[in-house]
Image 1 (cartoon, rainbow, N blue to C red):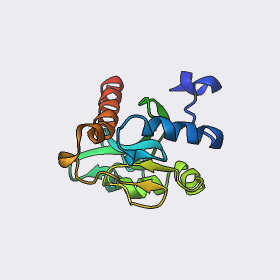
Image 2: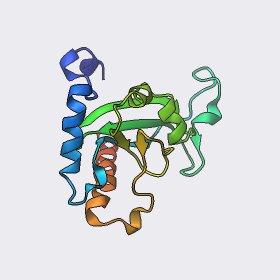
Image 3: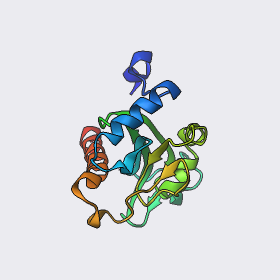
Image 4: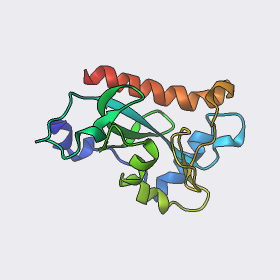
Length: 166
């Protein structure tokens, strides 16, 4: 991480306004139906498992525990573009925090709030639905193949990140 952070050209870069419309067109081109018209990126959360932190390291150890997985971890939020490239990420929230709240603590949430009308991010049903953060497919098992790509593409990215981390 230090090597990546040392080089500005290696930093993740969320699209600026002039690229947002181009990105939304590229997402729309992925599917036959206009269901992703205006989508700039897809977000998802992932539990990065960690050893139990000590009380010296964190004030509230219990906030890092996610009961669903019975693991301690960090809630990693990430956003990908239409080519499944990471364009933004955050690991600022403990694992016990839900994705919807973790998103509000991420700097990207304020960028999304300032999107021009008609542009949005797509997320899964762990996100809070709003005008700028939509959960277009709330029941993945009934989604068509093209809609399912939003889920499987993001999931495969996180699976790859999981293998890379350890």
